[in-house]
Every structure is written in C-alpha cells, then in structure tokens.
Image 1 (tube, one colour):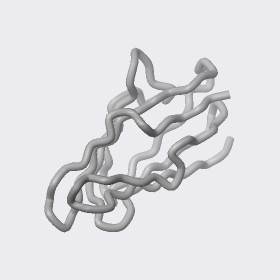
Image 2 (cartoon, one colour):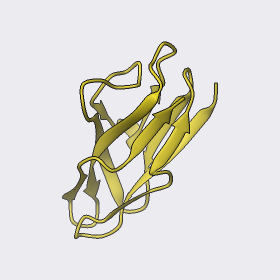
Image 3 (tube, helix red, strand yellow):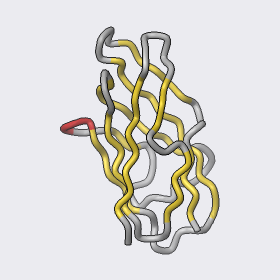
Length: 107
C-alpha cells in the first residue's frame, strides 16, 4: 500500500486551478491525501458517474488543515474515475470549480 498525495491550488480570482497530479495512478489499498495549496482554502471532491473508487465514498470534504484522506477500495474495479473539485480562493473568498478534469486510475 502506497501513500499518495495531491495538492489542489486555486491560482487566481478567475478560478483557474492546478493539481500536483491531475492524473493519479493507484492500486487497491493505497491511500490518497488531498490538501490545499497556496491561497486555497476548504475544498470538496465529488466523483462523477455512479461510483467512487474510495472506501469513504463521495463527496469528500476537507477538514481541519484543509486536507482529506481516502483509501482506494481493496475490492474496487480497475478503471478511470473522474472527480470534480470545488475550492475556496482565500484572497477573495470566491469559489473555483473544476467539473471533472482530475482523475484517478486504479489498476
């Protein structure tokens, strides 16, 4: 089991976003920790489609320290799982949304 990390960063008030890994390859049992980057506050993740590859399901909300951790289902199906991200841009308090770009590849 590996521990993977993804940093979510809202780049500006226009809502442009960046990820330390926009495509993350994982295996069953791996844990994934999402955290906020510079100028980025609370965030939520929602898997698109009908299923989440994580034991924790969907959606996931950041907690204290603007982080959230999920574990890839040990019995999960291999495949590509897209998720949307909504995050606060802290300088203005505005919300940026990415409706389905980041993905997790299980296999």
